[in-house]
Image 1 (cartoon, protein in one colour):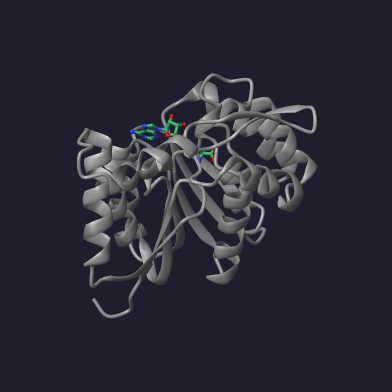
Image 2: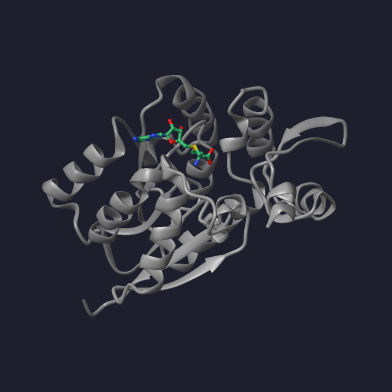
Length: 242
Ligand SMILES: C[S@@+](CC[C@H](N)C(=O)[O-])C[C@H]1O[C@@H](n2cnc3c(N)ncnc32)[C@H](O)[C@@H]1O
C-alpha cells in the first residue's frame, strides 16, 4: 500500500522541456510519461490550457489527457446531447465533453470559483463551444437540486463528478435522478491515490469515497465498473428498470 501511495503522489515532471503537473495516477513515472507524451491525443488548445493551468498552485486538480480522451469517447458512445459537470476548475474536462456534443447540445458546469472558471471561459470561447456550456457558480448541490426542481430529471445523457469528495454521494444521487435510462455517470478520484484500499486510513474524504465505491457496487439502479485510469474513474450506467 505504501508503494501504491508513493507512485500515486502528486507529481511535477518536465516532459520535453515543458513543465507538466500530473494529475494523481497509480502508474509508475515511466508509464505515466509514455501516456502523457507519446500517446496523448491533446489538441494544441488543450495543450495550452494544460500549460497555463500548470502554473497554478492547484494544477494537480486537472484531469489527465487520457481522462479527457476517455470522457469524450464516453459521451460519444452514449450519444450525449445533454451533460452535467460537477467541478470545472480551469475547464479542461468541460472542454473535452463540450467538444463532442452536437452544436445544439448543452453542458451544465457546476463550480464555486470565479477565478478558476474565468480561465475556462477563455478556452471555451476560443474552442467555439462556449454557447454549449452553461456555467453555474454556486455550490453544486444547489445547482443540481434546482435542475431537478425545474423538470430536468431524466433529461441528461452524461454526468462527470470531480469536486469536493464528501459531497460525492449527494452528487451521485442527484445526477442519477437527472440522467435518462442508459445515461452514464463518471466519477473521478475513486481510488484516491490508493487510500480507499487501506483500511487504516480514515479521514472524511477517504471514508466518503470508500463508502460510495461500496454503495455503487451494490446499487441495483446501475451497472458499474471502476477503471484504473488516472486516480480511478468509476462508471455507473443507469438501468432502465428502477
Ligand atoms: C478537481 S477540480 C475539477 C477539475 C476539472 N474537472 C478539470 O478537468 O480540470 C474540483 C473543482 O471543484 C470545485 N468545487 C469544490 N467544491 C465545490 C462545490 N461545493 N460546488 C461546486 N464546485 C465545487 C472547485 O472549485 C474546483 O474547481
